[in-house]
Image (cartoon, rainbow, N blue to C red; front, side):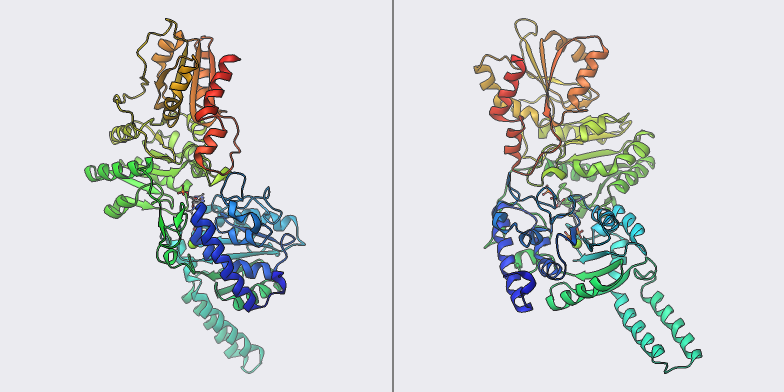
Length: 608
Ligand SMILES: Cc1ncc(C[n+]2csc(CCOP(=O)(O)OP(=O)(O)O)c2C)c(N)n1
Ligand SMILES: CC(=O)[C@@H](O)[C@H](O)COP(=O)(O)O
Ligand SMILES: [Mg+2]
């Protein structure tokens, strides 16, 4: 039956069916379960009242847009969620006309919605933003622009009092306080009615108006409705379909911008997710009956978190900053143990970087752990605040390379380019977890400038016989003399050492000599090695899990060029910036960085 024709009881039954589908599919494929369980009624009510795609419904981040996908013709393919070629993780106009704009990074939706609303005044634009994402600078800049101006825009604050973990910061308290304005709104309504009925004299009217004003400022010193230029409706129970539908019908008729404040419960309807909202924010496949996820081996993030904990224990100047990703970056233990030296600054990557700069300028040893893709948000700060002052901030760039099911908005493939393109940064991509520990240990010393340590979304790799790292030096993993019949040199950084070693036997079986150098240091490069031993090889391969333009490979090419050495350099990296969602392993294979396709690619280079 068409949603528009359903009565409330039928919609409630539909909500139950949707919750079951969400649990079934996400327990099999992994994904963002708790955020979606929390917005089932909210999304049903939006689609009941508004006419998508004529009216544009845009979820910020889009990790909670699964219900919207189910209601807009994608239910038949929903079992393919986050799989290669299947339904995507966030909103994407390439996937459906009902997704008016791409999302994935927090805070962008309000700006996009502002543009969509101004660009098409005939439609209503409804943008749903979470209580953590609304305090992101991007969202605040948009609110600043929308307030008092954009009449066909409705902002829905989905307030579940959670980010991935606990929601942090004073702005989150401010938005929480808007609830208090409900009391104020009730008082205001009563005052207005009394005045309008003409039951009171003009003197008393003045007194009441002043009292109403003081009550407002006592209860909510800044009101979203009057001070920021929105018509405010709230607080609405986000699981009460009648109330939601009535609210949206009201909001639809009002000349906006309208701000609707909705309270929801993250994980609603699935006890395990309600009890552990952080775990079920984004989860890998799990057993729906027990709520237990399959465990995997130690990740690079875990090794970082454990090593950082030890470093912080030994050195009081060591500090950590996370932009809303404490658990994902492995830092939970350190945050619990050292609350006075660890800072979750919320979804504010730009601020996190400059805040760390300030700490470094005060003689502290800040470690900023941010996913590669979200680090893109802080490019200006990296140049203006860190590079120009050469501040010794340590950056842990997590999820560097292909991340898998989070798809094209989340692939961490540009950081090598943007960090090597800024002066003063040391850029290190450990090739094993032992190297990660070593470089972290090194970084606690009094380093002279900013240092980046890039780690993949992968389980740890170790070499049986691993030599120690020396700053700026690469490690030869071969014995033979170059030039004596040995023609091919492979310089592998980060995760690509493991990939290359895995195919080395097959390459050799096919008659391809494989001399490997493990190159944790992307910048500075081992120039002594490049000028000496490397220059004796005929073919040089540079392997990295990153975008090929402006890459480690590019740096090697430039270096040979600048030194007048003519070499055939093959860049084994990602030739496209549009890598879709799928499993990391299969994407590595498809894009020529793993297994048989890596072998073919190398053979192709040698044949050319
Ligand atoms: C720029 C950026 N930084 C970090 C993230 C990771 N992230 C995704 S959802 C999320 C929390 C969002 O919380 P909220 O907006 O309250 O939505 P909820 O999940 O509670 O519905 C974070 C930190 C992101 N997507 N984008
Ligand atoms: C939506 C979002 O941006 C995060 O929830 C992200 O999906 C987390 O990724 P990990 O699962 O790799 O921590
Ligand atoms: Mg939230």
